[in-house]
Amino acid sequence: MKFEAINLMKFIILLLLLYVSVHGAFDVDTPSASVHAMGCAVVAMPANPFALSSNPANIINNQANLAVSCRNFYNLPQINQIEINTNLQPLGYPVSLTLSRFGNKLYQEIAIGIGLAYQPISAMNFGFSLNFYSLSIENYGMDHTIGLNLGIAYRLFEQFHLGAKIANINRPVIGRTREKLPQYFRLGLFFTPLHPFTIAAEIFRDVRYTMDYRIGLSYKFDLPIIIRIGIRDDVNSYCFGFGMQLQSFNIDYAVKIHTMLGVSHLLSLIINI
Image 1 (cartoon, rainbow, N blue to C red):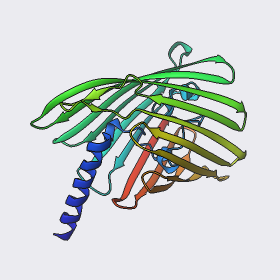
Image 2 (cartoon, rainbow, N blue to C red; image 1 turned 120 degrees about the vertical axis):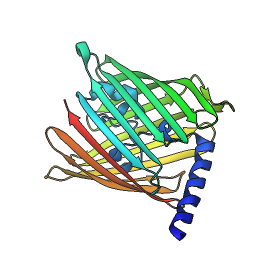
Image 3 (cartoon, helix red, strand yellow; image 1 turned 30 degrees about the vertical axis):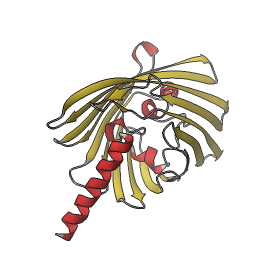
Image 4 (cartoon, one colour; image 1 turned 90 degrees about the vertical axis):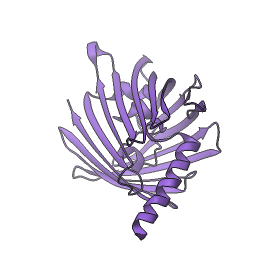
């Protein structure tokens, strides 16, 4: 009985957070385990299978793959997010597609995204993405909207990369209350001071809230194992995880700890095509 009461309290708090910030499938970050384990400070990460969500300009650096990610929200069995992401290069042009679903039969968010990137000069990439959002609430109906995102990435030198993204620049709204989707800007760097060790740092600003500072660290062992740790300032959360990088596929796992809501688990599988 006590366990059910705690879960109910967490569920109510989570719904309040959803109302304030329209997260879930409309979240500003993919449910990827590797992304969250780096504190979501990945806007400048050049090789990121989930670049469609973090910075569409870096889609151009991805090899063809298929990825599936799953995130549980704070040990609530009825609240999960599942995302399927693929990177392709038809006719030599990089394209990324994603499908994300959050919620249950009472409350459900679905996001479908497509992104393209091009390289005007060897050190600079540009990219854009379109997201189709669908919100469904039982007894309240369904609504849809579209968001436009722009990204840029610049390689200062081989070990140092910069990146920036502007999201939902068309100011999309959804639902009967015309709730605004997150409109934000992110600027960051990705630095490899030593080959197995990387540092990622990012400034994130949602127009409705104060600045968020993010940082992520990773270290790759001689074995095909990589460990990661990340911290986010605004939500008072931190995350850590590990991954196994094999020739044909990668497996990543992360634990995200929120100071008030508790623990979330994230799992990702990436298959190289």
